[in-house]
Image 1 (cartoon, rainbow, N blue to C red):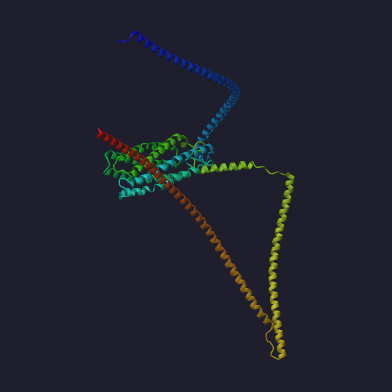
Image 2 (image 1 turned 45 degrees about the vertical axis):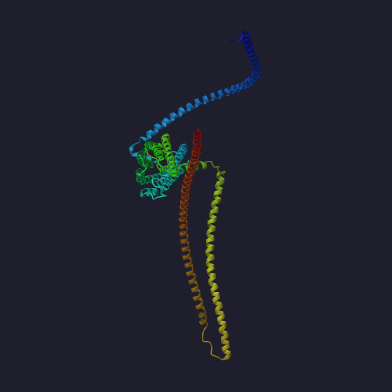
Length: 603
């Protein structure tokens, strides 16, 4: 039934032959791989040996450079150690001198009580390093406040936008009177916040390298305190409407119990926000007063700002609950997202400001090198410091000027004699000139008198000539003689001439008086015109400032609206993409369901 032994042996032999052939082929392939690997190993070994030789040469060169540098730096270190030892000795000497000076200063401070009032006359020194640090700190504070102002602007603007959307849409039906009044008040937020930012910017500009910066000398801090107080009053004004608006949200027919709970929590948060800004207003007002409690004030400000960290978290929970409402529109969702973003920015800015106060507490609460002994630094002392600084700079520039070449004492005496004689000669000449001018004026008057006499004589001569001609004619004709005498003719001529000159003189006097009055009136009008021009210039400056402020507000509002539009556009695009994906999924599901139904029918 089985195979024969010969067939079995043949089959076994064929199997062995096949296995042997495979082993031979595999052995040949392994020999080839071994040869190729050996060749590759030899090439890599040659390359690595060449690389090793090159690296050894470079290592020797580097070692030589390192040895040279070690020798150089060893010498430098020895020199620096010697210098350090000398400086330590000098520092110890200076420390002893400083200690002695402090002891003497304390002895001067602990002075009799009746002379303690003289401490107010002490003038502090000018600390340039403190000024640079103060300007840097003020720049950081300005950046944080600008971020805070931007977050508050967005928060109020988006809150106003939300009031017009939920719980009633103002485009469809009228909103409640509370929300309408709340919206009107919210629209005024930029006027308070922009003034706050502008006052802090002016405060930053007032801190220069050539000024004295301390809490007692910052005059612009009063303006910032007033603007901050105005904004705090604005928050107090809108708080009742804000609470009532959240109450209306709770009374909406779609408001769930969880959402109402979150609205109650937000009411507490709004009260807390207003209370925090009320405390900050008091602390800023305290900073504007001279006192030694600045450390405690900045610490409390940091604590207040840290208390607003959970505001955005509560609103995020509220927004997530409102997303599930069936009547919520895309515009409402976008507004909620923008509100949440502004609240996150607000809490982030408050946290950064709190950290900033904590990190710079030592610098903000102290004024090293400024406060005079025994009293606070006041603006008058700061002015005196800067006046002394200017005097010192003027003195140094004066002593550095190249002096003009001097002359000998004898030459100076000779020059003085010449100058004295010249002065005496000048005074004599001035007297002669004054006498000559008086004489000239007197001669001019006499000249005018004799000119008038000559004119009168000429008129008399003409009259006498005419009278003689008339007498000759009468004698020739045999008529009666002229009974008038020559004196009568002279009187007839002189009286009209003198009256004419008198009237001209009176007319000239009246014209001179009138001209003088007109000149005085013109001078008064000119002075009034100058005052009016200065007033109009100031009004023009104020108008330009108002125009700039309004343009800034307009640009801010425009930028805010553009940001809102861009965010809404991005959100709309993302929603369109989501809708298109959902439609594709629905279409694919429909096709799959159709295919399944066809298969079921075919079965």
